[in-house]
Amino acid sequence: MKGSVKWQSPSNIALVKYWGKKGFQIPSNASLSFTLSNCHTTTELRWSKNENTDVSVYLDNVLNEGFKPKVTKFFDHVSELYPVLKTFKFDIYTSNTFPHSSGIASSASGMSALALCTCSLLESIGKLDKPFFEEASNLARIGSGSASRSVFGGLVEWGEHPKFDSSSDKHASPFTEAHPVFHNYQDTILLVHEGQKSVSSTVGHGLLDSHPFSEQRFKVAQENMAKLKDILIQGDLASFTELIESEALMLHGLMMTSNPSFILMLPNTLAIIQKIQTFRKQNDCHIAFTLDAGANVHMLYPEKDIDKAQKLIDTELAALCANGKYICDNVGKGPEQLEC
Image 1 (cartoon, rainbow, N blue to C red):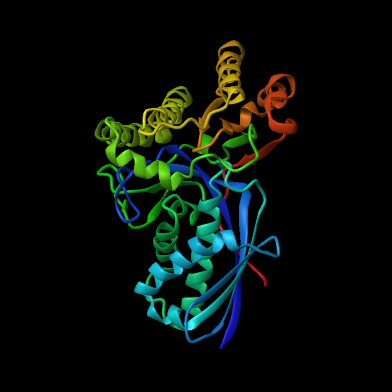
Image 2: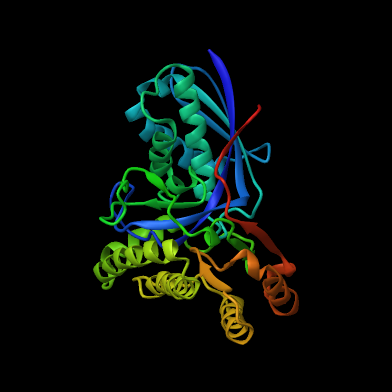
């Protein structure tokens, strides 16, 4: 038995951050994100029958041994749910449209694409008896928590929360109640650093276990989720800006106060943040920033502010990016299955 399937899955940027776990890939607080469009991973899964699971991973058509342990671990865990996977050999061909491991959630797009391919395989052999995308989100979570959100488009919530009716720690759910202003929100990713970040998200999550502020953080995050739901429904852009910027700085504050501590922001990260805040005050617009676990800055703004945002980039921000590079993106529709 042989076959192949290909999925394209996007990255996402969290507005309320997931940082900290209370069990195996179970979040300590709920999170909510924008699914992106242009920043995505394309993964083709090729399978054939084999006595034992064997995995080969190719990045941009070049064998990459560095990815093999994480992908092997993913199939080890997923095989506990679907033992039939233990009888396959997998060749995985993957590529990104953005720099890997630099804080643009390449694990989210990569593991969600792999989970979608895995669900397609299971469906094709009659072994998937759960809703396709819900189970793809569950499997993606096993590979990378934030990947659970990339299985859906638009605004996506993950983690149990009393104010979100369909919330679950096991899989993400689309949030469809937002004001239309958020349907085509823009995200310009300012590439302060294109290389691999100095500390992995896995290590960062682990450091929160003994963090002196962890319990207060989880409480604030749950409160911010409730606030953000109302903000999104009302289309309150000023409150949206205030909340997402606070969340971004809190995330990095947790990193800086961990033991051992680590700093992922760079001098140009701070310079960009200051310029965005100054420009916003002076130009009557809703250009805001958020950060993932890296040095790069996500500049978020409504479609009506595109011209002002481009002016800011051209006159002040591009010069602070590595080699002047930035990525223009926007809220996307979610993954897409492609022809092999």
